[in-house]
Image (cartoon, rainbow, N blue to C red):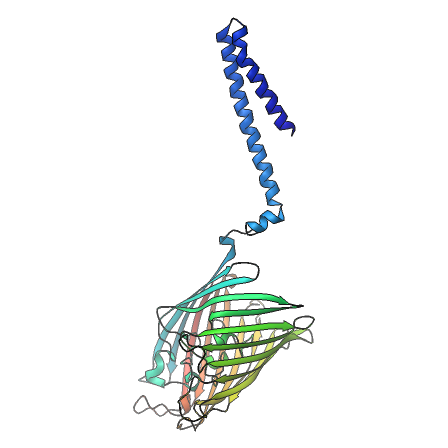
Length: 428
C-alpha cells in the first residue's frame, strides 16, 4: 500500500509542475524539469506494476483454489508419461542340417499414458514389429509348437499378438472411484487379457525373462489376439490391501456381447519369512471357439499361479492351468522354475533363469502323434549401462514340438528341437 501512495504523491507533484509555467516566467527551464519528472514518474509506475504483478503471481502459486483451477502444479506435458522399449531377438536351430535356420525378429513398444485428472487416465500403447508372429519364421522348419496353438506365439514370446508394421496394442480409459474404504478401478478399451490374468512377477516380462511363451502365458487358455475390446474391473481388500479381486469381459469390437470371454481372478500378495509371495487363482469361460454344433464348444477352465522369493537371490514359481473343452487343442499346461539374481558378486543385477514346461494335448480336438510337449529353457540376462541395456542368452530344448515329429520337412523325423536364443533389450 505504501508503494501505491508514493506513486500517487509523485503524480500530484508532476501535475503541480505542469501548471507552474503559467505562473513563472521561465517556461523553457520549467518545461525541461517537467519532462524529466514525467519520465521518472513513468519509470516508477512501470517498476510498481512489475512489483505488483510479482506479488500477485506469488500469491496465486500458493493458493490452492487457483492451483486446482489451473490443473495443479503440472502442465499438460507434465501429465503425459512416455515409455519406449526396443527388443531384438535372434534365434537359431541346431541339429537340423541342412535345414537349420537363424531368424532375427524384433519390435519397438511406444507407450503413452495421459493423466487427465486425479481419478482418470487415458492410455495408448503402440507396437512397431517385423510382422513375423505365428511362431516366428520357423514354421516352415519345425511346424508350430503346442505353446503356439491358440495364439501363434511359441518359442519367441515377444512375437506380436497383432502382427503388422505399426499396431495399437492397447488403448483406452482407466478410472477409479471410492467405495467406503476401498477404491474400485475399471478400464475400458482395446485391452490385452493375457496381461491381466494368470501371470506371475517372475515370468510376465517377455523382454527380460524366458523366451518360450509357455512360461509367460498359459498355453491352454485361448487368449484372443488381434483387436481385442474389453472391460476390466478390480478392487483391493484387507488392512494392507493384500487381496485383489478382478474380472473382465473381452471380445471383438463387432460382436462384443456375443460369444466372448469372461475371466475372474482372486489374488493375494504378501510376505512369508519376510520375502514377497504371490498367489493367484483364476477361471474363465470362453465361447469364441464356437462351432455352432451342440453345447460342447463352450471352453471353461482355470488355474493357479504362485511365486516366492525364497531368499534375497532365489525365487521359485509354479503355474498350472486346465480346461474341459472338446475343441481346444491344449487341455493342460504347467510350468515350474526358478530365477537366481546376482549370482556373480560384481554383477548384482544379472539374472539366471531355469524352467520346465509341460503341455498336454487334447486328442478329442485333433489327432497327435504324441500327446505331450516338454520344454526346458535356461537363460542368463546381463544388465549393462545402469539398467539401460539388457543382453540375454538362452537355450531351449523342446521334445515332440506340436505333438510329434516334424512333418513339414521331408526326411526329418527327429522329435527334439534345439534353439539358441539371443535378445537385446533397451528400455527408455
